[in-house]
Length: 239
Image (cartoon, rainbow, N blue to C red; front, side, top):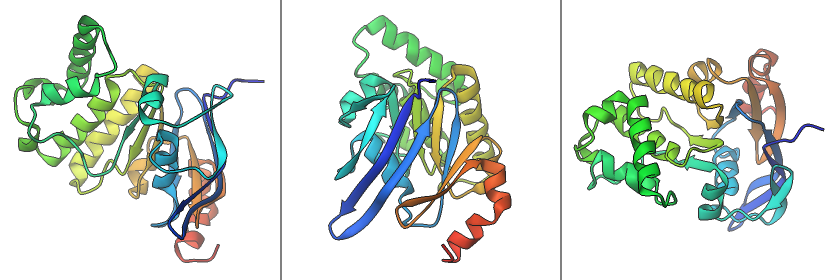
């Protein structure tokens, strides 16, 4: 049987009295780009947070290469999973280069950390050009690229992206998604994306999971999922 990179099996998450996930399961393999789709409150972002150890799992299991793991953020990063939360959370008082150095805090070897920073700057030329600029002075698109670049410093096998297009102009969204696709193709990084911009998402995602009320209600080829009409039914409350 083929070794699956990352599995989320029957996980349940509550926030107070609110049931955020109700037995959701997904699988991620090397180099895949997977879309998590559904209405607000469906549990999409909670899956990412549960994987990364930011949402308490009451029941269920996260498995890495088939073995159960305990999601704790610094341990998850060390295993090869990075999380880029929504909202372009950069350290505005630090320079671009300093933000990337923070992203590489687990890379103990200074030469290796410097090599990785140089590599992601080559991948994002705008960041290289503005390496000494304060992150707070960057445009929204540049901050999003910086947030993604910071997540790449640890050379992750899985990159979790939560609403990377949020608040960006259409032209910048296209550039950001082109970079996300390039990350997957060049580095064989598996990418899991929560995103409402379905046009951009479907241009790069091979598989999709549709969530509604904390449950996975459909999964499969992303384009076939859209053609099935399940999204319309979910968004209109028919599932």
